[in-house]
Length: 315
Image 1 (spheres, one colour):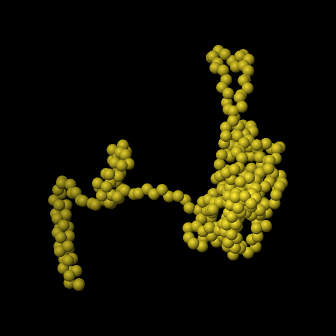
Image 2 (cartoon, one colour):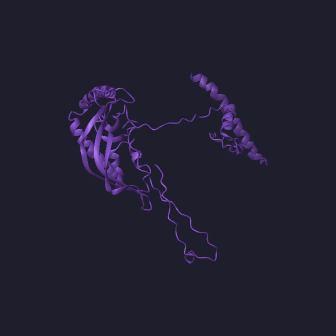
Image 3 (tube, rainbow, N blue to C red):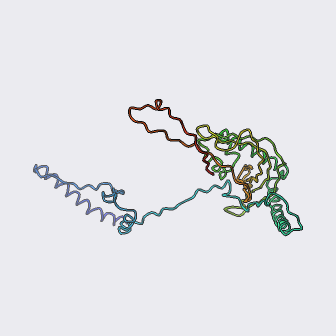
């Protein structure tokens, strides 16, 4: 092995010695010819695009890259995944029409009673799963706690306390509550509970993988509240602060059971199909004034502002 290395180094030594001798001869002769030495520069991994590539479309650029043997990078549309809550209400509760119970002697009453038995059986199985992770869970105490979460969440919404609101509602419910309220003023007040809250529905679905359980409990609340919404000009859009109204709501409370630090948070609201429509929203409209000439003043015209017509928009 040593002899082969020596054989390879001997010719290199001869060539280098000859080159040095030639250089000495050139220096002694004081030749005026310049010496050019080739030096390899750093390899350029980035080649700037040509001026014509700016006017090329995306399809033409991809075709040019394929012709050059370059595979264009694919663009993937990715959606953010949040495992702390589900993306919706699983198997939502269907409230009976009018929130009333039909007679069991009628056809509608038998159908309604059969549907309630099916839902109650599935709810009992879900409650058993919830008790495996939360031994102190009871439907009576949970209904009262759900009402407290509902009141605290709406108080934080009216006071624009984002930190507290995030701890009381899920990531799916938060944008639905704050959407469109940036330049508005909310006045909400809880007066009393007409009926005690009641747990009417419970489900325990899993997401992403088996065993990753989420608990969704639907609570029926019949309360008396006041709500008033003002626009950025301070004018009333809907509701009334002095007029309390009876409100029947079906709230969905959710918790990530597998997470030991998970808590019950407001997840959504079920609006039945037979619910009455909401009050129309009154919006502020600008009334155009008279067109003035350059030499005229508005005060000299004695212009009377016409009364606007009652125009309402449904939200």
